Length: 129
Image (cartoon, rainbow, N blue to C red; front, top):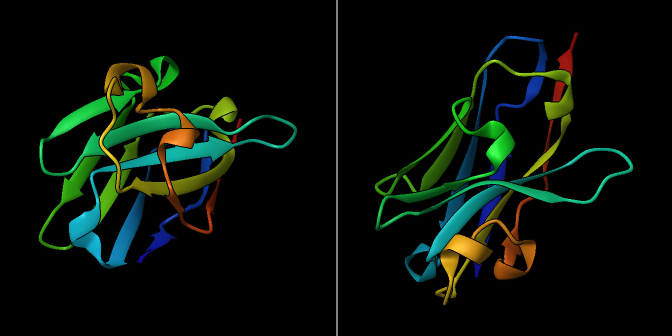
């Protein structure tokens, strides 16, 4: 069993930056893929970025490419999301997710929530214009 705890959310003005972090504890040796998802009010949850911690392979949603950077620290079992040039449409609850499965087609499925079997409680990010 793995526990995921997010931290670092908050409010920022448009154009600003924010860094959110996810700490994994428990049976972290079983983890394959870790990612960040978000859900805005009235919208479906969407994949933002993900990373294979032990392979340093990353995946990004098109709308955040060039603005968001996902990184991991295998020694600390953390996965961070550095967000820059934040816009109002980035406002959402952000969730850390992890998987113990290997994806057959990660290019297609790394940002699909069904690919993950563990979730954090979520953390709010609010961007004001």
